Image (cartoon, rainbow, N blue to C red; front, top):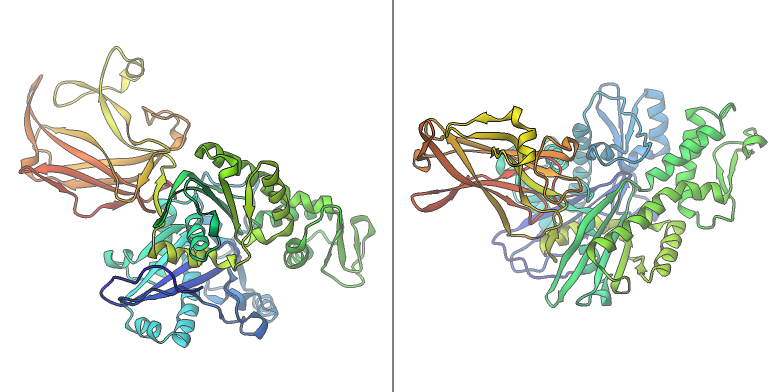
Length: 593
């Protein structure tokens, strides 16, 4: 990709790497930030196992590892899927691990009836993620050292290297926390505050938007008042993000609806194919994992990526001349699947994408004729998927484009452009955000009366009801990068208030202003606890029913502008506004990411 953007204004050189760990394939892009120079975004295009001439410019490698009986990595990436490695793995009893990324997903983000491959080694998903991060970083370092002299110098110094990790739209603080921990375990950064600050995050949808803009794929579609929707169809998830173009010079877009994330990627086509084969081949000699795995491997490399016509038969070669069974359409090692059977594997994912597009349009208030959909990602390369979505777009007066310009590397390169030049100035809050608190009891309020048995007498002599929710950010709020949201809470004590704490929570239900955390408990999630030690001067003496007590008023502050939720506590001291020096990064599902 040609150099674009503005000159780097920093004082020292820095190496920035974007690592896109995908469900099925992964890649790395990088750029050297040199003071006064325009950064050039490049991709790693050579990995071990892909050195052959016809594969020398591959930008991605399989997200696959092999472990031995001691849970040590024996092969990864392209090396892990070579015929030699697979034979050695069979002989040595190594364990294959794939689709591990999906095990990081939030609890509420699951596909109907999904069945992920079991992990038969004694390692957590964070440790597996770290093993793969360590491998792909080693590959990236080798490539950069061979091809970029300044990059090699920075790598050798080891200090001025930062990382941008991409993740699906539906992931939040919990997943970011685990990914940051994996980066530490992998040796990318040290386990210090400074080290953790070198790991940044971006959603795959927003990274794809930046790639399309920076590479010119959005082109003339970038007109003021127009809407752009990114549909990033990948291996595990399909991420949808909708934006409104506010200005074109300089470019400024805002999120027009909260981003969406579907568990509807290409691996679920395989999943449905496996279920079909297990049923179709039941009570035959082919009804075992070895045959079905072999059929699916051929399906993945031949029939699936080329399927386009539901009226034509697909043929999957997996065996030899003796592998024949007319009852299940197998002749001489070739399985025949009708077009209607093949289309059934794709149909749930396609239907889910159509429904999500319609939902994004409704939430954003976009007019179809003013909306351009950019379809990117590895799964988007499937002819049948593209044809079905093109037909849907035409029926609904939508304009859909499938950019052919190396969109397989859209997320990794787009993650760098996101870090270099934020085109998105505001995003939508995906949930309601607030904090748990106690409310003064009011006998005229039915909700309070229903909780009378929970009420307690506080130090001021008044009755209070616990488990109340104080909303700080309404769902759907348009949030700029530096915008702050706050609520004032009071802490009371017989002695001076020395320590305060607040539980930051999100609500994912349908209510606009939920009042109680003890209702719809499955819709509330604790994001983090933020606490601080207060100086004695913050507490003020108050007169209560039973005498004097101390009270401290503090603001609970939330910042949602980028891709990590920050929580702060603030108070006034000697007429100056002070805050907790170190903001808390929340570690559970959050905001618009």
